[in-house]
Length: 93
Image 1 (spheres, rainbow, N blue to C red):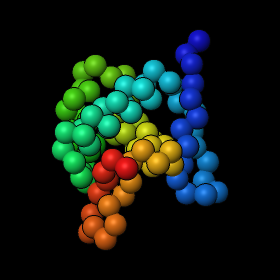
Image 2: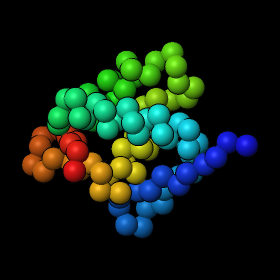
Image 3: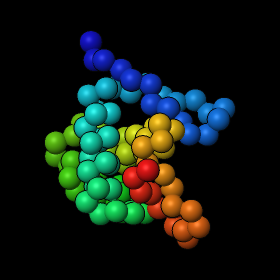
Image 4: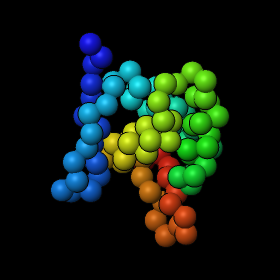
């Protein structure tokens, strides 16, 4: 049976979701690697870059997993939103 992980949500009162730990780990490393390589990225840039990197090797909706893992990484304090940016931008914490 596939091991699961509870992906947290950064907003108090909102519940996270249980997802495959293997898929979580792949997307987590992808998101962190992309932010290390590019610095600040908009949400759209992050999703597009993850799609390019994982396309053909990942089973499932890459954009859904990126969104879920991004929220979890925010909740865990590993990434943060860039304050006062017009578009939603993220960077390593």
